[in-house]
Image (cartoon, rainbow, N blue to C red):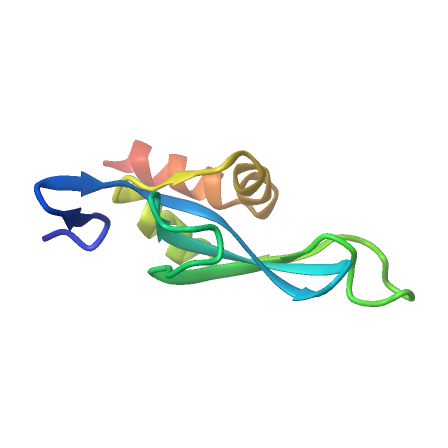
Length: 107
């Protein structure tokens, strides 16, 4: 059994890189996680690969803040994980997609 896929019966389930909502009401923060595609949005996940705060850290610093572990993301992408639209934008901004393309071209 590969690390990037789980099996339910005889069906392989794909892995997605997606957001899991955390935080208080009207103050969202998100974790960027690798999760099975069939799991609920805030359900079980395989690994945390980053965080995303769309409203910033405080009123003094209201810009969007995110941190992505590019090595973990490249590992999951090499094993077939598919990012959602929002996560793909974050990965592009962090440079993880460029690192993945470079690793893919090096093979």
